[in-house]
Image (cartoon, one colour):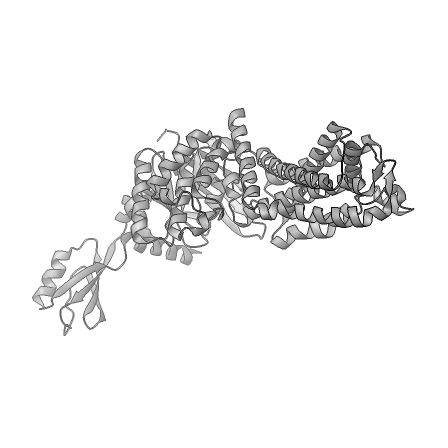
Length: 310
Length: 258
């Protein structure tokens, strides 16, 4: 691909004053218009990376270019292209959402009349307009999270970085947030997402990088990554306790309790033969569910492999 | 950012500061009014009537007015910026500015403008209160204005630097209590430095507040213990040195970026 990427990270390192090496020379490329997942266990280096991209953390070495603009050489121009929704709530508790949004636009040099209109638009879209004139401290956690998204959108950034934006948010609000962010992405904004809700990443993101111990351990498309999953595990609730579990080719069965079994199905196998064998053995399956979502299964394996290598 | 965008960013910070000052006016404006009224009643009217004239035609209550105004300006300029910027750090919303295109010098200027405006508001309040007790004629308006501006700038920069280094609220209370207040009281607010004997007079010359109070007293009353040029040299010198230090700290991210 020859087009200027939304993000091009080259050999970025960070060693804190305490001696902790949070990033160990990582390189990463995110294409324009992508919905990109940046995943990793706690302490992997995700927040340090996001901190460097948003100029809240000074890098020790390397560089990152936002649409070709270096964060080290042209900090101000690079920051004008980024919108950040941080992991921790960082709102002035005594200000009102409308003030926070309008001020945010001011920090990007956007004139007040435009900022006021934009603030109303985004606060309405994120269902916060009725709270626009209340102090932030009176808002719920979910409202504060949505306010941080509205604030990040005030500069209409070309690259939106979301660091755990749905942490502690109920499912209904999460869905409305993803609908909003999906629309933003569809309109052309590149989105980088970190989340611990891996089913969200699987559903929303087209490309993915997994970071662990300050290194990128996987960087590929979501489709390719999921295709590497050689088995999928299902949990089956049975009608009655079976006397004995039958042998099924390509499937490993084991009992979780008297009426629940786990079936690890190889990619080369299919569910038809499993159900046919169970049926022939007189075993009734009342319901079935995935043990974990596919990305979660891969994520755990990759991180575990990383630990073994380390 | 072009010049228009920079001015919008500056106005945003200054406006936010003023809105904070007015929102919590009982903490930002009222205390000075009450404290200074007490100073005028106790030191000016009750004690001052027994002291007599400090200079021909200038009673003690007139003499302390400039010092009391300066004391209020110094405390409020310093306190405004140190508490406001530290709160932004403490609640992490300083990141709104640090992660934006706004350059360090605009962030600093915006905060200093806010502190300056609070200093000016308090100066007007204290002056208005003083007029209930005395009748002051302004002798040198430009000296008065420039002294109050420079003093406010110097102490707002000092307050900013304090907030940058502060890690907890106690850290922004220590300097006003153990440095600012003693320096102010020993800065010739209530007495003439000429009344001091050696070595206290010589030691007092190392106190920058002495020069500020005297320059302001010259502007308001037309009398001073020190040459005016020395006062301007001290004020400008501190303003330049503290600006450079504050800009260095914010650009390097000391206390702000990891």
